[in-house]
Length: 242
Image (cartoon, rainbow, N blue to C red):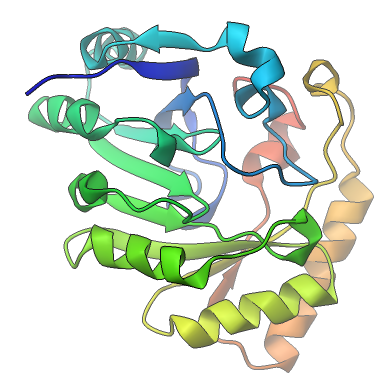
């Protein structure tokens, strides 16, 4: 098997997963460069906008795993594949290589590109983007991503919520995929430039949206949803690499 190079923006950790199905669990992040979306509130522009492509380095799966093993002290844990949109990258070889060494793999993507190697993941988080993002959801492509993962991969949905329109969208997602666990996350208004990423966050605004979201879910009896904050944001703000 030919192992293609992968555009990597950064590799960091071990830290904890800050959101979704694996929140609080130790992980090493492999953040890839490039994205087919341009969400209005994107918190990782350094991994999305081609203006920062000089920060994206082509790496072989072997080189990536070597760095992960150094960071993890040779002890296997979960590797979180993120971006940008990591589904753009040829990650199948990396996943196979890492799993042979006992590592687990989780990936988050907006669900715009289905890949046959989704079935090799331990956890696939599909995070379709609500109206506040300024993006349109292709429901057929999202369905193809669910199908590509198959029954062996734990597939979940996650939706970021800023307002009523986003919440209505999340309820639509829940109705379309009642068999998948749904995670709802209050949105974080992020800096417009990556160099400002360590600036103070709007903690009061996040907590206000969190309380509002909890009330919406309980009032509507949306009991299949799990409401969580971005744990890493509460601890480190918008700081990169944690």
